[in-house]
Image 1 (cartoon, helix red, strand yellow):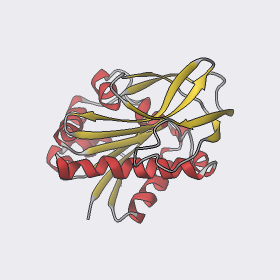
Image 2 (spheres, helix red, strand yellow):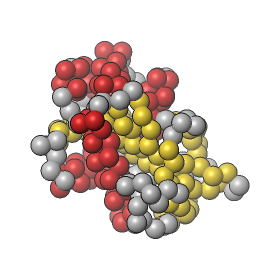
Image 3 (cartoon, helix red, strand yellow):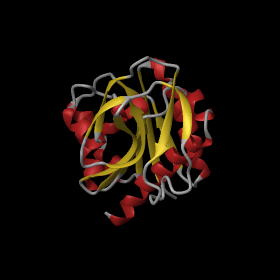
Image 4 (cartoon, one colour):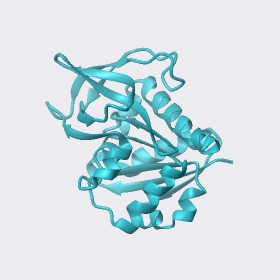
Amino acid sequence: MKRALIVQGGWEGHEPKQVSEILAKALRANGFQVEVADTLDVLKDEGKLKALDLIVPIWTMGSIKPDQLNPLLEAVRSGVGIAGVHGGMGDAFRQETEFQYMVGGQWVAHPGGDGMEYDVHIEDTTSPITKGLSDFKVRSEQYYMHVDPAIRVLATTRFGDVVMPVTWTKMYGKGRVFYCSLGHVAQVFDQAPQILTMVTRGMLWAAEGKAQA
């Protein structure tokens, strides 16, 4: 049985507990043993992390200590997958540039705030994460991000003439990284079935890398 660790906390406005419950349910439905922790101290045990298949951080902003961050980075480098959504991974630990490098992007702004209606375009129809999915609309925060040019872009949105990645994958060492900027609050997952499908597939994809590392 594959094993996943969800670490939830940080800014409460992103409903980390509720979002973690949604993602934990999706993983358990796919045969995962899931632990949900509400402290970053769970990351201190590098041996435990390296025995996992997947780590899902849901921790917007906040700060992380070196003895919490370094084992996480090393676990992913060694082949453990990491996957996350919205600010829980794309706006976590703003002072930690190596964490941002691992993720492949960092939140910059959400013009118009919450409640913006925008289109999400499936950019890559060959990826197992997005294959068969159609474009959809969402009403939420629209993330404008700094992004790593090394990412593989799976879905996008537009800010005028600017095409902005929404969903992507990349590698960090031997570890597979999946990120999706949707998921501001739990209710967002109810707006279009493509959202939870895409995120669930992304988590599964990230976890598959452990066997190949």
